[in-house]
Length: 325
Image 1: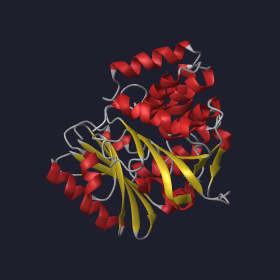
Image 2 (image 1 turned 90 degrees about the vertical axis):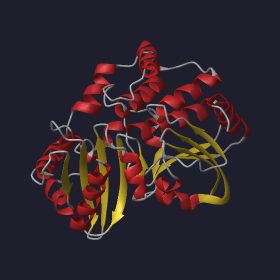
Image 3 (image 1 turned 180 degrees about the vertical axis):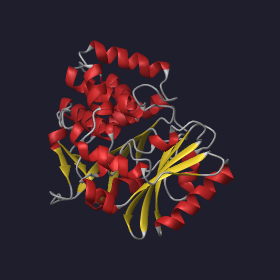
Image 4 (image 1 turned 45 degrees about the horizontal axis):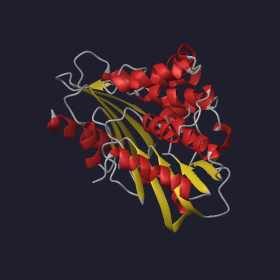
């Protein structure tokens, strides 16, 4: 098994030796996914390479300040009219997370897999995976350093965004000394840390506040107070005018209740499918739990999609969490 340094060199040679790349992150991208996408785009532009940035759907509005974010193609609105031989997947814990964009990969496409999820199964012809990294953006920092390009405020802000969002504002257990050293360095390049924290972690839209109220009205808890959950339905979304990105962070509300070990958000996709987001206080490995349902993620933050009715899925997941406790 190759070392991380060898993986960095392999990724570097992948970028240097090839051209005309398709760069894709996971469906419903978060801050780390978007910042990693534009980070790779910036790196490729510095190398004089041709590239296309894409996602299955739109990127969150609050991420549109990032450099190159306006170049991320929304596949639902502008599907490519061609196939791609060279693909770079960022922040995709498994191949399925690229979603429908996979239909534009040539059958024998060469894929570089850049990710930090412990559940990543190492798909692709080249891999740059570091489970100990707080964010894929942290790995992108290392890759950019390997090329020794001059940092600008724009690219520093993109990498800082990935670190900021995936560490919960540098509060989560994945906030390592390295993360803080990188953040300090990026601030030195002109990153406005307080402004990013306000816009990315604090500010809420009115629909986001309204759908939060709807979700909290569904709050339930097990008799021992260790598992707590909420759910959101398509009706809630329609009534409040909320969009998918407005659900980010809601799962933390049941998790943050004193004594709760696992908080869960059940988001009804349609009558026979539910997206499940899980957050752990530390006693339960929710990555393993999500993986048992076909999903994945991190020890303390993971998710999956399950087919079935909301009631049956709540029962299944809660019982599975109980068995882990």
